[in-house]
Image (cartoon, rainbow, N blue to C red):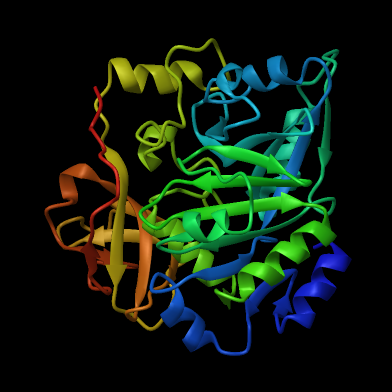
Length: 347
């Protein structure tokens, strides 16, 4: 975490452990506020990889699942980086700032992703850097967040995936049932914006933002789930995170074959579990008839404002009509919910 940004957050009452904001003095109040009122959250749990140089766009186009040639300064893009077998190494949001491309992804997987990408630069005129500490970032969410922002900023992205640039701040509108925004910029500019928005929003820790991401049905790949899923399993095709019209990229043949010739056997669902212990990414799921054979895995989980935990999980489609249990066939039962978008079992 940027030291100046960390100092600012601590002045605002943040309790920080391992470069992540755990809470702002009252975790129960913060949990209750998430989804019910405006919240503001540090996003240092994400890192930034900057790709710059005259061949940066072509290089990224040859590596990622989405069509980088379609991205402009006024929009961001969800995408994935896969291994040759089509298994996801990272899912991330890509945006442009100051003529460079930025990959926003969980900081825990940034180093291995950056190292692997650098292996394929060869003679390309592109430079890849860890820019995590160069820009501060936070999120703002709430039912009328666009209107609140319009009172402060002269340019606000109102549609999901839109991006605006103003006074050194890059503002991204994110998909989801609750309007959400990300802000990236120099520490002073970001701190000033935080102060203004904090007058009308509840500061929350990392857990609150993770819960909103789960409600939006956006998958995040962690160290525990690297190479566990192909893009369609975590609904990236339904989230416009995969292009089936672009050229080759690692794993493209597998992803395309699944789309055009295969039948999807697993996909991601939104679920709730009434349990005291938090589910962890990679935890196995079972059905009563699965004979100790896992029927799915947890992608991500967060404390629910209503108690228990909400989670995203990749589950066998054929098993979804059965009762699904966490950890074992007699473990806590999952309650399957509704995602805010439509998923087709593509063929």
